[in-house]
Image (cartoon, rainbow, N blue to C red; front, side, top):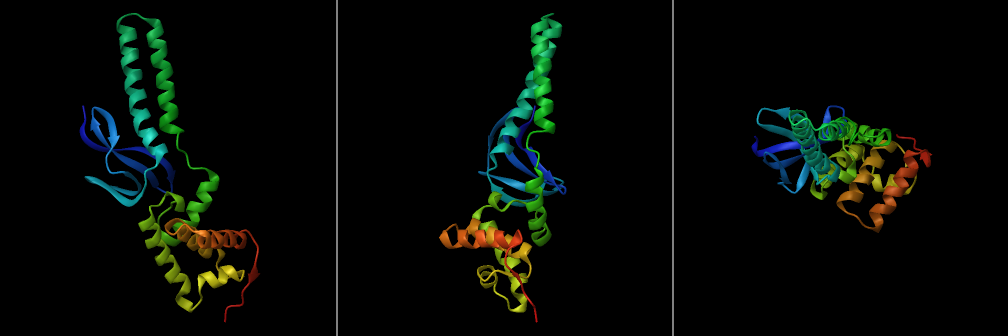
Length: 208
């Protein structure tokens, strides 16, 4: 039996990164203990490296159900076989099938999510959807990416509002991060315009 804490609920695997949530364990998962999840970038002795995320409900669901269905399946199959109760054994087998689904299929990252995560990861090193981020981390990444874009004297807001296509992936990611850390009418307007540029609108700038 496990007593203490454990990272469970690995979902959204992409580029060797995934979301996990730390649970209090008393044999089985009792509750998430830190109020948030984590984008795990590396497993190290004694813990995980990564960045904090908002509590990811799919990770929480996976954390509970994967362990409980596996334990339940084992108990039912053993009891059914030992007591010669075929129905109990059959239910255990069905529960084992559900456990397989939960372990290998629940929480897969979609192609659309991966496209966005690829963009964010290329610029930040973290293959994450902006909406998964807590406000403070979104602000940190926003400042980091914005500083790189504006090194040459450009202003990302001006380029987005004027429909200038210099590095549309970068301005789109900046706008998405901005909308997460400062959700308001202005940030939403910039996000929408940056999305249009990313999808092919706007004009190609001549960079001097």
